[in-house]
Image (tube, rainbow, N blue to C red; front, side, top):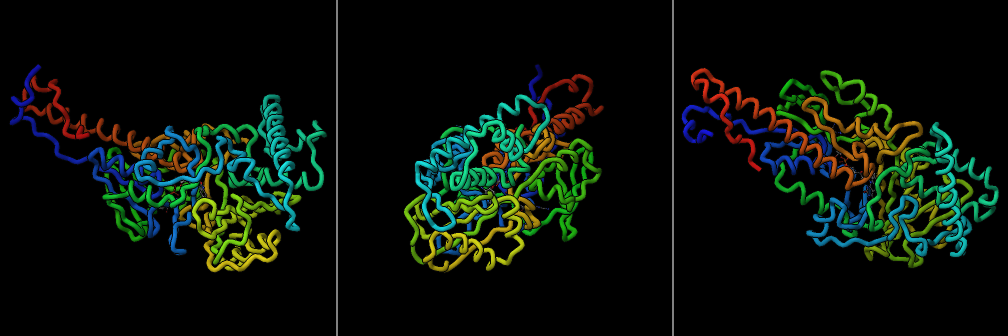
Length: 484
Ligand SMILES: Cc1cc2nc3c(=O)[nH]c(=O)nc-3n(C[C@H](O)[C@H](O)[C@H](O)COP(=O)(O)OP(=O)(O)OC[C@H]3O[C@@H](n4cnc5c(N)ncnc54)[C@H](O)[C@@H]3O)c2cc1C
């Protein structure tokens, strides 16, 4: 093997720095940009909003942090890819449930349910119906084994109740059952008649239960974003891919060029077709964008001058329909601040989004008054609009009826030098922060590999220059781009 240095004068090395553009400054995009920067790429991140974080939106206007987007770490354990950062930053978590289940993000003993007249539902009944709900869902599993055709979880439950009349509930017990279903709808950000029987329990749940980020998610994303070249207010409108180059145009008309790009924008935005891909994305990719479903969950955050509610983790209002049920997270338990967070999902969330912020806050307050008639008016409020915000157009992805789960993977698979990231590309952890983060890292790694491979080719081409003679053509020279 020849000594590389003996060819030093002859081999004209490429000094081109590999480059990438990341589109979208949510967890996926920031994770990808951070990883590519660490791999010595020149990285520019284009973000349409005037802030980073995307569906991480910690607001400080009350004088303390509250999250309008994600606030739980699902899977409080070391296996959670975000655990090392959260741990290093010393950020406290408040565990609301030790159960790694999509059904119970609060431990059953912390339930505080009320009927619409403000009477607390006896705890034994709450726990009994919780078990009935689990049994019903187990029975829907049997139904799933019987039939190949996918149906909604609402339809499956109706069939189970028809077959097992002893599981049917009446009166207040029925209303409590509706409340459990309403919380399940919250998990998927959609109504039970759109959740897939085949898919609803297929995501991977990390162990350790569910924990609230007491100081909000912002410190985590800020840490990852440190030192990155982030261009806020840059809305991407066109993505043109050439063989070894991408050209990205933003709404001001400015164009950015790089070796590759990571597309980390929400599924809702992709579905709206507001970004032109040139050439068009392949049919299988367009199909994934078209067929995957995104739901809506919102937060109406009420800040009171003092606590007047019971010292419980949350207040739930049961009703004869899931649409009529309510859930208020008591942030005072976790943070010490007098705040309740009302969280509607599905059709209710979409309907409330049509109201003004003042009317939405009033609506949430009216739900609270049902159980606490002497409740004092909030002093401040914050209202999210994840369904209509043009930067998101939905809260997170859910398993729609009849939609195969390989659509998530199709959404993730790269197209030429375009790499896709974001919660909707995560097969395992769809709809979560750690899912978005993992896909950002994965896209960055695939992008790095592809661009490095290309430079290796270029270096070989340079070495085949006629002036170098036959012998040098096969010599392996460590590539400059391997600066890891
Ligand atoms: C109300 C709510 C509660 C949630 N609760 C939890 C929870 O407790 N725990 C949990 O794990 N997950 C939760 N989630 C889900 C979690 O927030 C998301 O899965 C995750 O944050 C998505 O990250 P992302 O990077 O994929 O997308 P995003 O965070 O949406 O980032 C995409 C970015 O792209 C930008 N963008 C859009 N269009 C363009 C464009 N044309 N050009 C340039 N940039 C563009 C957006 O502004 C945004 O910054 C919740 C979500 C919501 C809405």
